[in-house]
Amino acid sequence: NAGVTQTPKFQVLKTGQSMTLQCAQDMNHEYMSWYRQDPGMGLRLIHYSVGAGITDQGEVPNGYNVSRSTTEDFPLRLLSAAPSQTSVYFCASRTGPTLGEKLFFGSGTQLSVL
Amino acid sequence: EDKVVQSPLSLVVHEGDTVTLNCSYEVTNFRSLLWYKQEKKAPTFLFMLTSSGIEKKSGRLSSILDKKELFSILNITATQTGDSAVYLCAGIYNTDKLIFGTGTRLQVFP
Image 1: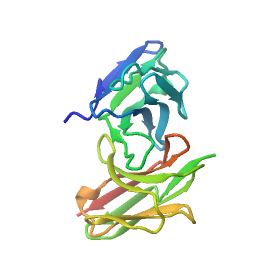
Image 2: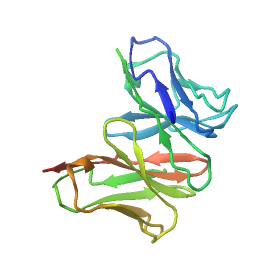
Image 3: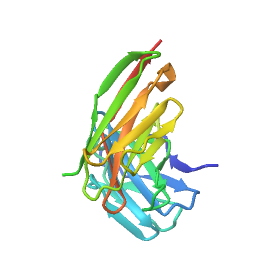
């Protein structure tokens, strides 16, 4: 009963470093997405995917890359980390653009960029 | 610009009180509105509202959507300390995108 699994839970980076946040779901959901949550800003959509091989930008895509080679996995890449990317990151998935489309969230990744 | 606005930003009550949280939206091609509860980490799903005027209920929590006035409310009766959390609402619009409000932080004291 894993649901949405995110790794790592915590990460500290230096400015300019790159890293990949991992997200996997075992519910055969077509739709997967990445959000960042900052104090007073709510959850903001970074990138999303409606199926394997298909990705699109959300509200705040700059500085992040994604790919979706399988239905299960949706990694988020930070190419050159900046202090402005310090945030809590959530991966989420759902069945698709139909009724009953509630999101299932991962447990989050706390990222600090120094 | 699509947006979801929640009010109040913060609320402090005593156990047993009833609270009403508000969510207004301006969302292109609106489809549904969702409510989530966020305690320490990941948000957990509460309700999805698609039709206007139909109340959804789960225990002491209930919610309703008004598509004419573009808002939703979340009611919590007989609050308990375990209800302390940030409550988020989100509008589903266009092709599969969700836009979240900034949340209402509820603190319930004994």
